[in-house]
Structures are given as C-alpha cells and as structure tokens.
Amino acid sequence: MSSAGLEFLLNGKTVRASDAAPQTTLLDYIRNCGLTGAKEGCAEGECGACAVLFVKQSAAGACYQSVNSCLVPLPAAAGQEIYSVEALAESGQLADVQRAMAERGGSQCGYCTPGFVVSMFAAQFDTPDSESLGGNLCRCTGYRPIRDALQSLGPPADTPLRRRLESPAPEIAPVDYETSKGRFSRPCSLDACLQLAAENPAAQFVAGNTDLGVLTNLRHQRFPHLISLEGIRELREFIDGPEALEIGASLTLTEIGERWTTAPAVFREWLRLFASPLIRNRATLGGNLATASPIGDAAPLLLSLDAELRLASLSGERTIPLHSFFHAYRETALKRGEIIRSIRIPKPLPVHARFYKVAKRRVDDISTVAAAFSTHAGSTRLAFGGVGPTPVRAFEAESDISHAKEILARTLHPMSDHRGSAAYRLAMAQSLFDKYVADTRA
Image (cartoon, rainbow, N blue to C red; front, side, top):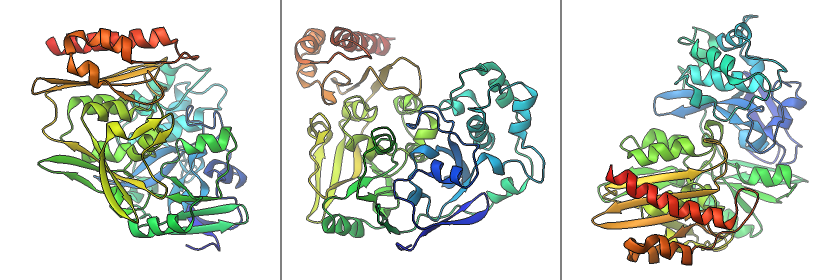
C-alpha cells in the first residue's frame, strides 16, 4: 500500500483514508465517520470506552479481539477488518450482549457501555468471565449488573458475525503511507525494516503502540516517521526448543499466551496481571522491554528467568543478557537502527518461580513495586521493578541469600512519587522476598 492512501474494512465496508496524519488514532477516524459509540475516556488505554473489534487469527482460527482504538494509529488498520459497536446489532435485532446489558440494568449514563458491549461480544466467543472485562471501567452503574449480563450469555447465535469467523482473518501486509504530516511504514521482512531504518535515521520504531500512543495522545509528541514492527515475520517466530524458549519480539502478549501451551504457572499468573486484555491484544514483549520503563511488568519476570535478548541490525546480530540491557532511565543497549528480534529463555526452567505485583488495583494498573524470584539447582535469582531508574537483578543479594534483605536495603535505591515513598518501596521489596521464601516452603 503506497502513499496514495490506505484501505481497511470497517463494519463490513471498505473505507479509504488518504490525507489523515499518520498519528491520527483509529478512534478519531471512526468517530469522524459518524460512528460515535466508541468514546474517548482516558486516551491511554485505561478505561476501554473506545473499544473496537479486530478480526485476528488465533491458534483456534479467526477470532474477535477487542482493542483500545485510542492507541491504534490509523495506518496500522490498513488491510485489517474492524467492527465498531454499531455493527453488532444485525437486521434490526440487538446482539445477545446488548440485550443482556439492557435487561439486567448494566447501563446508566451509557458512556462506557459500548466499550463493555464490545469486550463482552469478543468474550462470548471465547471465555465469558469477569477477567475478560479487566480493561473496561464503569463509574456509575456498578459491576454487578454488568457481570450478571456477561454471565447470562450462552453460545453465540448463528448470525453473519459468527459465520464470519469460519474464514481466515486478514494477513498483515506491507504499508508505506505518507502525507505532509508524516510517514508510517510497515515492512514485513527484517531486511526491509532494517534497510528502511538505515535510510531514515530519525525514524521511530513502534509495535503495539500501547506506550508510544500515550505520548502521542497526552503529551502531544509527534514523530516524522514511524516504522511498525507488527508485520515482520522474523519477529513473530515462537520456538519451544529443548535448550531454550525463543519468543519473537513482535508477538503480542495474547499470542504468547496461546502459543506457550506448556508455560509454567508463574507465566500464567504474570500474564493475568499484565495490564488488561485490551492492552494484551496489542502490546508486545519486545516493546515492553524496549521502552525500558523501570516499572514495566516484563523485565522482572524475564530477569528472574535469566533471559537473553537477540538484537538485529544491518551489521548483523548479537545476543546479550537482559540484565545488561538497561543502562539508565529509559536508556538501553540498543544502538541506532537496532531492534530486539527475540527473547530467549534458557532451559531447564526454574523449579520454583513467583511474580508479585504491588499496585493500587489488582489488575490493569501500573506497579508500585514488582518482584520476581526463581530457584533452580540451589541458586536463587531476585529481580525487581520500581526500586530504581531501571529494572534490577539483585546479584549481590543472590550471592549471600541468607543476608539478602540487608543487602537489598543497601543496594536498592528507590525513589518517592505519588505511588509510594522510597521507604515504602524498599520495605515492599524486602517483604516480597519474605513472601517468596514462605510460599516456596509451603
């Protein structure tokens, strides 16, 4: 697809955009089309009022995935198939989820209702439980009638939208979209991506846009050229080998959960605490690491598993341990034009492993402190987030585990902010280590 424009399916009809700025959100575009069911509530993926459905390919076939349209740059929709809440009522008949919400009093002001309905519609084809609504917030009705509506749903009715899933989802195709307001490129091979980056040194890589989109929406940052990693085949590989597990950096968290069928319990527990289903359907493991947030959820778990990163550039590839990747606040070992190709977790996996997250809310929240611990062959690893300018692997404490808490008090350097004081963060890091010791003794 060239700079002449981009096309995608919206509610079953082809739409074409030719002059929108590349960082126009999908939400703004569909609202400008008159489809105003999706709302902007937070502009950062916290509330789900903007949810829409993408048709995606899962391990079981085509499926509906709900995503935050406020965090999808419009060119990322090119070639895709998208449904807004307006499409769910077919032939004048409400969808099951819409009827259930109305009959059980699940809507009051109605602002958040379309987002809930979209997420519930997707969940009806998969697992209609309360966790599927973890990214949708309601401020006036209360969750009991919404939960009751969700739990009342039976199997999806035989409608055109159900039958749509009998055919494969659209593939991700190359895009090169450019206007006077910027450029968006989506190469589909690693070589093409790296060459494009070399030709445009000021370009910014983007994957799920769940972090970069917040900068665009709330801080009004503009990037002259975005290079999407979403469609690069080499970054979407998943290899569960005898010596290591290798996870492509552009696989979404949802896709990783589907493909890692033998994952240990610690991974499943961690995945449920990582943002919300709406975010996990877009966010990538590589993107979470590359942003180098000191409170990102991926780093502590992967550090405790002794993970390595496979990095790629035009000059070749190199592999580095994850613990040497973070240099300073939001600074990494990545060189200009270099990307994370995959994350490698060596085997055998630890005998014991736990991930703990301290936050204001149980799910869909930013960590105040996160910690991951693992024990294998008599060796214990300690990793933390939220206790310094970067994620931390506590090597010194690992070397003298009997005095780990005293060493943590001396070597961790948390900051104070509105989520917690430095003293509180340090106390939590020590307490979480105590909890790990107690949990693994049980």
